[in-house]
Image (cartoon, rainbow, N blue to C red; front, side, top):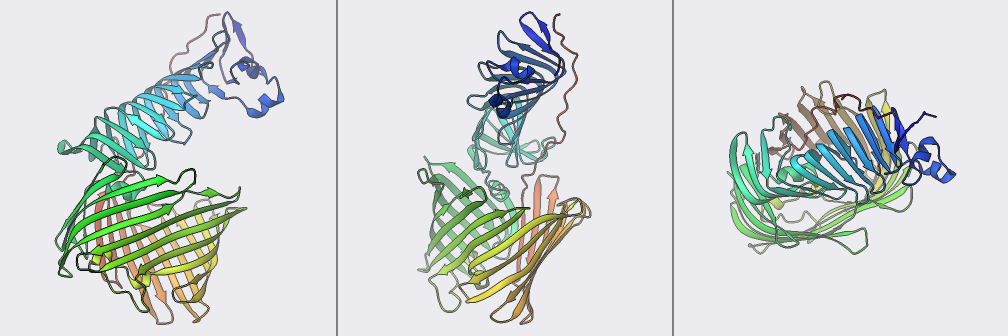
Length: 529
């Protein structure tokens, strides 16, 4: 038991204090009054150079290298003041807070309302889904971040190649950031100002698509593309343009996502109208397109079983009178075994309508063409296990069988092993070998995916699918990705068999904290004797 030094109006503890609750805080420092309190554990844990607890006012003050855990968050600071009755915490000096979602926020001063799970920070910084945000004031809850005058970027926060300044912004983590009064800067130069800029936070590719991009494709040639999005009531509206040497496009559309009552499902819908000109096919036409779909996050059927699914139907009508429907479905039920092993039953579908006995006729626009070899309708049962080889190499073993409804064949993946070592550091690599044996036609298809780091920021990958019955390569792809000053990504992909080339230069949402938190050690604030 650590000694307590009583004093008028409070107690002083110059090392670790465990404050256990409102009425029985001091008793939990000394020891729990009941078995229930002992099992629940203390809601406040403080580690500091000096901790002062006042029993009369039910407050705790900690000074010097403070590290505490309180009601779902962790805080580091130079000084903290906790009001236990009000369930409120304040912190000052080199503040770092980690909220209940694991998100890290930094600032000069913090106020935490534990009842409402709201964090307020001044002179604040936060990284949300790969986007760095700095603001004079941020208010954060688990599902929403609101900031006043702010700056955001996906580059190195210390020296960003570009940044966006805003009068205010609202961020829904994992969904989007709505930037009001946005101005895009490259270096010292202002490029464009917009009343509202919407940045997608669903994944790095969607985030990059919220900003202008340049590149080259075999269909569009050398192109410049930008998608400007804004709200029209509940739906998200957008204007998309792409100007290329081989194709030009302009499109307007609406997107909407809504939960289905209390069900763990969301309905997605979209509609668009656009004009397209493609020199390669010598065609100029309009396209009307709508999408409708369902998706769900992970649904738990029990402590070891979960289900995920996405379903999407796309229907496009062209000014030429042609029409194409595309069905995409990915659904999987996963049972989690012991030792990082899973057993998954899944259904994967990519079909084009109207169906035909032979290859479906190509749509009038090359951008909508789906290679017949990519069509699939399979039911797959797969066992997967992850592990480690040595201290650094992660391994994945997969074995399974699938039934493909399109060619009416049954195949089995005898072994699929992946070894990954690092991502973008020297002497790091990955490789994967997947033999696929066809039980009906008795031949083996070899699928490989191998990559190696060429320096610190360049990665080279070769992906191949080799058919032993022909024998020939069904696909042989070369991919080079390069990070440019931790801000932009250059991606080059050449598909040798299909004679297709993609080159894209866009932002890379990968900012990281350049320095870990370090608190300057202040002089001790000693209590009166």
